[in-house]
Every structure is written in C-alpha cells, then in structure tokens.
Length: 333
Image 1 (cartoon, rainbow, N blue to C red):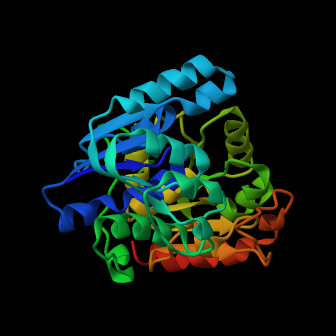
Image 2: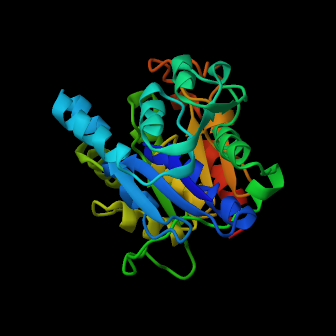
C-alpha cells in the first residue's frame, strides 16, 4: 500500500502525528509511507526509517509573500506526485485539505465536518471519520490515520511506543557531572501566554541541584535564556541548535521542562522525562501524559475551539509544585 500523510506544521503537531508511523509499519509492514510537510519543518522528519520520502511545500512562504505564482508552483508539484492508494490529511485545516486533494490518490481521507474547527475542509475528502475536536490531539492523529488504514491503535500501544525521532548529529552533549542530573529548560513558545515567567524559571533553577541547560530558538528566547542564567549559578545557555541538533541533545537529557511548545513535545517522542506547563492551552488535549511525561496546568478553563491568547494564567503555576515533580521524575532516571 502506498500512503501519503499530510501534516504541514507546526513542530509539536508534526511530532504528535509521527508516533503513528511505527504502528503503520507494525500492521502494514510492506507499505510505503511518504510525508508532505512545510519546508521549514522537514528536518524533524528526517532520518526516520519508517518514512520513504519527504515531500516539502512552501505554502507558508507563498502566503507571507502574497505570491500567487509561488502558490501555483507548489500546487503544480503536488499534482505531479505519484498516485497513492490513500492520502490522509492529519491536520484538518482548509489549506491542508486542499494540499491533500491535489495529490493523486484512489482515496482522500480526513476528519468529518463535525470533527473539525474549519468544517469546510471535509468537502475535499472522499472518506471521513468522526472524533470530537476537543479530544486529545494524539488520539485524534492516531485515530484518523488508523481509521483510514483499517487497524486499531490502543491507549496501551501509545504508552508503550518506541522513540521515533532520529538524528545524524553525534557530537552535541549536555553538561555532564557524574553526581548531578542534566535538566533542560525550554523558556520560549509560539505566543507569550504560553511562556512561563523568567523570574520563576530563575527561582526553579535555584531550587534544583542539577546541571541546567537552556535551549532557545530565536533572539527573544536567547535573551530569556541569558536572563535566567544571570540569576542562577547552575545554568548554561546552549548555542542556537538546528532541529537535528535539538533532537540529539534532548535525547541525552534527564528531564525537560517548558511550556506547550515543540521542543518539550520532542522529549515525549524520545521517551525522555518531561514536565509541560499549560495555561492558555489545554494540557489534557495537547500532550499525552505518561509515568515519565507529566503535565501541570493552571486553573484556567480552556476552550480548544477558541484559545485566549490574553490568558496569562501560566504565571500562577507554583515553582514549588514544579520542583516536587522534578524530584519525583528524577527518581525514575
């Protein structure tokens, strides 16, 4: 069977979909799996032995530049792809549904209109499945793909997953001290209300007897990292990492702490202990808690259909509660 999966962005969403690859290969060992993704996120998929070909598009760039020429060029690339038995849109947006439908296939599969925030997307599929939009995102991803391919993925299957991110980078290593754990802080996120306050990261760092490294991705995050470092004695700041380097260093960390953002979800994918802090986004939906991957949520009532970016309740999460979780998880390392 020739399968194409459409998940264009963003980093955490792609990671939360990639978990399904190992289950496809388990149930359909002779299948070929291609993936369609935005160019900027290609590296998170690279080196995965279960993916045959990664096809990239630049829809985001075309939109940013308001370039219809580039958009039609990207659409033309999709029409020239080989014919698949099934194309599965695991994103469920109008743009991803259009991308999926342009790819030649016997079947175009996605969520039904009741299962989507952008209900019109369902019109581009030949076959659909139903699952509540408010359901856990990893359950949604595994459900739409397993429904299209006619096998089941259970809760136990997800809990027992094998790590599924791979890196070619071998040299990056966290600070090592034999009697101390290595903890990564991820202070950044895609919007401000998902960011835990710098002063609280400083308090947390000063409570922990560990080697702490701060990972960052842009100038604003680097500034936060340097502020945390300036207020703590046991903190180092990483260089700017490529996605391949990021996968490599997180695989070597004992514990990752951060908000609802791609790098913290990478820890989940690599079976690395993590604590994810949630305020304006729903923790019950945006990750999959395990015995080593814990969630701490603020008291906000979050509507997954309409995220309130002015909800800064993440700042109310107590440092002492995070520190207790750290001690609990490090006993498992």
